Image (cartoon, rainbow, N blue to C red; front, side):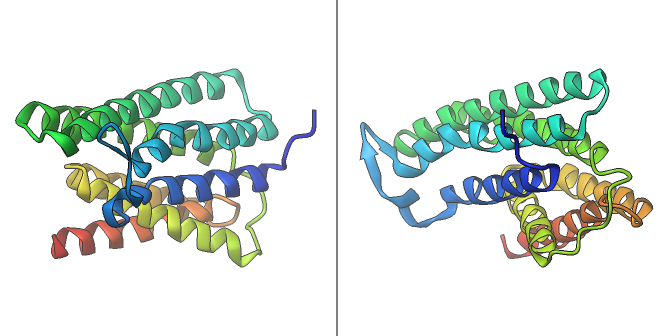
Length: 203
């Protein structure tokens, strides 16, 4: 079976994550899609698959130890479950806003979802060690995009403090690995810190 290289797989993961997790912020969620749903809701439904498939291919290309796959499974489960809770509660809240929908969407769903993303980032970061620093500018642009997406999502999802801490952690880890591909995570973390702070100030 033909598989994309590690770098291509991570680039596709970053692109899918950045695009899918900003669709909901577009005007009117791209319009209605029937039965009280929006087009953005249906894009949300596909988001975990669009993000996790290339991420898995990236892990496979890196040929890491078995524990890597266990953690990838844990992160994937948390991400997909949290995202599903968010999608359901958010869709209901768009039609009939109430306290219970807010709880499941903004707290339970988002915290589970973002925890899963944090675990997945840790797994993907482990595949970057000992690989050369990327030279293509697209890699750096995608790293900024991922950090901004993390920061804006965290601030909009009642995860501001934890989002800031995790972004700072990514920045620190990336700086420690500045001689290899891990340096990309420093850019992700820096962009995430800036996005969290700016988003929090303008809310």
